[in-house]
Image (cartoon, rainbow, N blue to C red; front, side):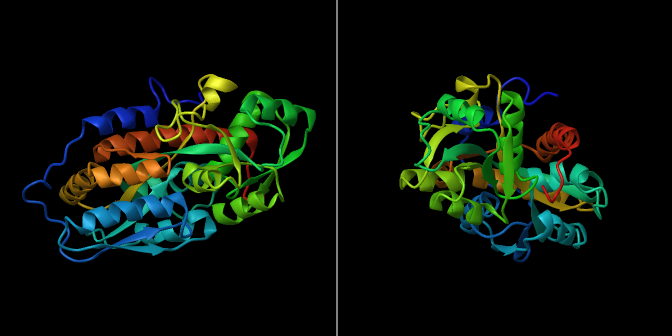
Length: 329
């Protein structure tokens, strides 16, 4: 099973692309929006899938005649929130945040999924790609990732926290453990916040979490940051190595999010929305704020985002099948 993106890493490519972008106006003749746009976030407040789109929304509010209004509809591994978008009127004024879990993992994880993301949703635009971070409680003796691997091999069955079963947090750790031959015990939480709180409290020693969640805790000294899962080091954390350069060549995992619309949304609307999003993703304020959370914007066409989602669905669907991951795991 291929466990890295072909050619060069997504985050690396996005970094290179972002450096070339310059602001440009929304395409002439755009037909969107004509009223407030609701954006359904099928995740709890405060997670990267909530924070990054809201940053985009703040930037676009200065540029569009009507604002984006974000609505958290969390729970049910993202199914209720995503289903609300599937069933929405396809007029471009109700969009949803699509992520690795809701678009690429759930079709394999949930055989009775009440919709088919490929059939019932239209990818509109990628928004961001963000690093995952390997972090430990300060009481853990390991000060580098190779040290941690040695410690884990000497302590099989070590418990680690995740943001929930089949989340990016869980799948990143599972993939790394399989590549390194580690025997770990997964402890799933209901979201990154509770999991990180228990890591900070020393309830569990280890977690792979989004950089958006982990970096503030690392800055405060509450956890120790050992490595990031991107192909290259993060610009804001140049001293922190990657998993690939330390223990597992070629390893790369990024959490990602984008905008989706109901399947019947007219192509002209999808193009208009995408054009507006591209302007927002080029904004220097957005680029800087994303970087604070270990993320970069991922500009591109709706077709680019659709192709990326298809590739991720194949990649993570295979891991879910091979590892027999279930929601109770």
